[in-house]
Length: 517
Image (cartoon, rainbow, N blue to C red; front, side, top):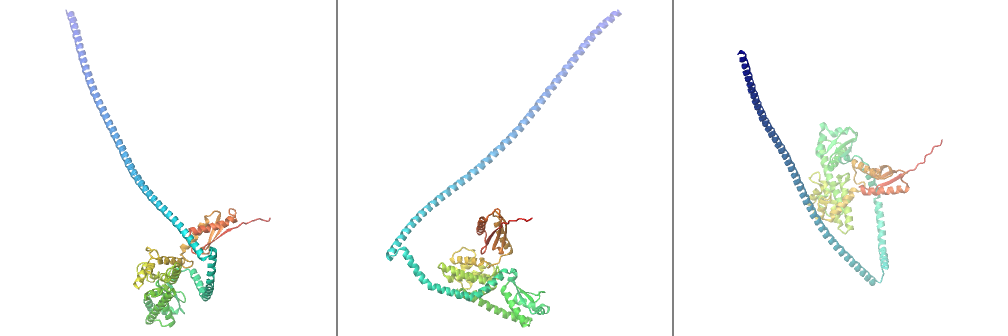
């Protein structure tokens, strides 16, 4: 029984174990199924999340690409619009140019038509004139019963007979005049040569020297505590320079009349010997009166020499003051007289009033006598003074005001004055050049000649009135040297401005060298 019990207990135990195993297996299977379901659910959730993230990334990428595409499209549209605007502007410009060309073509066509009409009219007029001259010549020959050669011979013989006596008289008159003025012309030539050689331009026009007998006179001129020299400077309006230079006292002033007055007064004081303030004032006043009389005499002499008729007394005084005025070292009074004579000669040659032309030339620089006292240029000052002192002729006033082309020229006499003024100022020796201008002219001469082929060296000599050109004898023969000289001379005439004439000398030297050993 006990064994059966054990068997039954074992069977029951096995059954229970089997059942328990089946229950446990089922529980494990259920648990595994639940885990698998959870894993599937999680996988589904993860797949959904991954899909959503992928969709979001795809959408973001698509939006980004769309935005970039939109930006590119906008940029392309803007560029197209800009190109369209440029093309529109270019079309407008081309249209304007086209219209302008059409307008010019129409104007050119109109002008060509007018020129053609004028040419045709001139040809017709010339033909009529030739026919008229031929008819008149034929009629003249018929009336005089002379042919052309006979008429010319008769006219020339009569003219020669009429001019023979007058020619002899003029030759004799000119010979007498030349003999009477030869000595004076010689002095002028020497004085001009000295003037052109002088170096101190500023000193010549602003400073005068007064010789004194001894250096003790300098102390008397200065006076006790400088009272004499102060009185003299105050009375004359100049500066007196007393330095260590022996035997000389310097008078300096920009007003040449004051400087000349002071020089004469100081010379009188030195000769008189009585130098004190009262005597200084007396001598200076006396010298001023003498200078005013001298200025009036000089002005009257200039008016008589120019032969211009009546001139107001104040204008005569201003003309006299021009004697002490220089322009680029050229005396303004002598320049005015020269311009007056040139104007008169040119006016008479072309059939104008020579006396009126001389008057215009004489008064054209009258403003320079007062340009240091009044504001403005000397043409405006001169015209104002001339009008103030009774000069009523419009030709004279216009010539004074416009001889430097400051205004529009309305009178032929202004042209004559401007031409004569240029001739007088630019003739050789009339005005001295500055050092910079002189050096520049020499450099231009040498540079121009050096540019020709075959030239080795160029030297400007005779103050720029001659250039010596050293040519290469192997590259230039004798005939080519002559041609080179002519070409250089023509180039100078065409390209440079210069007074007088310039001599061109081309030197071609051939040397044969041998040694005796």
